[in-house]
Image 1 (cartoon, rainbow, N blue to C red):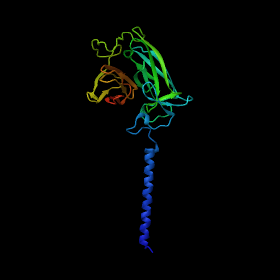
Image 2: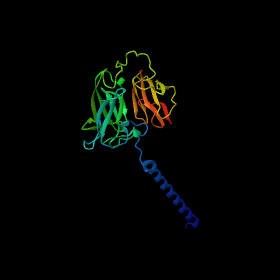
Image 3: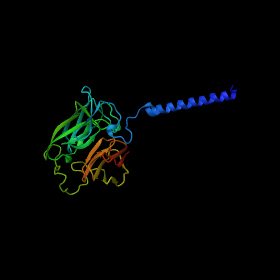
Image 4: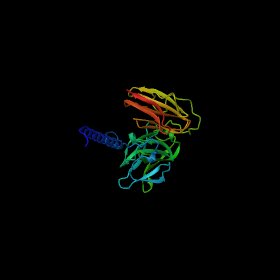
Length: 296
C-alpha cells in the first residue's frame, strides 16, 4: 500500500499536469484569435494577395483587364460605383466617386476581403493612373493628353481581388475630352511628355508657389536623398518633385493623395499641410518610403 507521502506526491503531479494542459489550451485559443480575442484580417507573410483569408463571395479564375482575379458576389447588395468629373478652377479635373454598398478602407489594404470594403483603381484608356482610398481625386491636366479619353474606376477588395457581379468587374466609366481650351486648364501645355521641357519652373504652373519644395529620386530601388522627415507648419504648401526610374504610384498617407510616376519623368504633387501628425510618403509598387511629413 503506497505511503501517505507517495500518495501526496501523486496528487501533486496530477495537479501540475492539469495546470499545464489548461495553459496549453489557453495558448492555442489565443493564437487562433489574436490579442483580445479578435482575429486579424491581414494575410500571412509569403502569401499572395489572392491567397489572403476571406470567404466573401466566390473567387473566380477569371481576371479583370489588369490581371486581378475576380471575387464574385450576388447582385443584391453588391458594391456599385459611378464616376463624375468637373473642371478644377486651377488645374485639371476633380473626380468624384459615388459608391453604394461600399466603404473605403485604406488602413486594411493588403488584408482579407471583407464585405463591401476596399479601394478603387483609376485608369485612363486602360492605363492605371492611381489607387484611390476615398471618393475624391484631383486629376492634373498634365496627365491627360489632348483628345478624347475614357476614364474608368474599378472597385477592389482589401486583398486586391476585383469585386464582380455575373462575371464582370464592378466599375464606372466616364468620357473625358482634354484640349487647349478646356475650362479650368488655361495656360497648360498638353504637349506629350516626351517633348523637351521648357525652362524649369520652381513651382507647378497655374498654382500658388509652394512654401517648401522636396526633390526625390528613386533609382534601382534606392531613394535619394535617404528617407528622412520633412517638417512643416500647419497650413504650409509642399511641392514634392519625384523622379522614378520605373513606373509607379506615389501615395501620401493621411491625406489620400496619389500621383502617377511615369518612368524617367519628374512628377510633381502639391498639397497643403492642413492636418497635423506624422504621415508617410511612399510608392505603391516598390513599397519605398520616400519621406515622412511631420506637420505641427
